[in-house]
Image 1 (tube, one colour):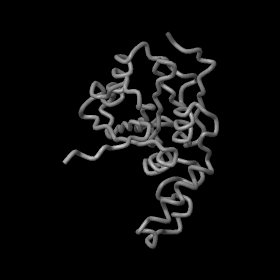
Image 2: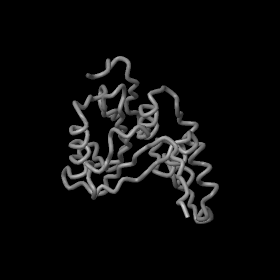
Image 3: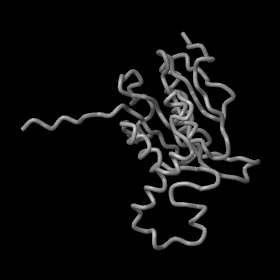
Image 4: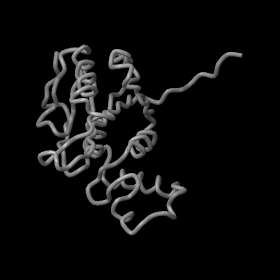
Length: 190
């Protein structure tokens, strides 16, 4: 049974802040992450960048991990921001398909997908972050481009959605990232 959509937190798209919206939708909380907090993460990543001396004057706007005017954060910001919250990001090899994901795994917080998009009649090509999350036993597409969250009827429909976006239009380079609670790895017994 679907949760009441009024109780589901869903931020809508603004500029290229889809990673910010995806994270807040994933955490189901307004300002769980802010533009300032993600910019701070991106700036810390820059300080660790050994290629920093090769920057150009454009690097002040088009920074390595984000665009300082519009957002457009990269995977490094996603990973670092979630690690600060005690979460782990695991890249999912899309060649294995969605059937290889255990959607009922209790430590799976959600899935963040990065897809190529075309806007303005195909003149603008970019990438877009989408969050998919299980809330009160029901999976939802929390894409910030949607007017409201979309409910999936079951795990099979979630897998169909993920497989569809992987193969849709032959779009290259769709990436899935599984966000899990911090996992403590046990050392192998000797």
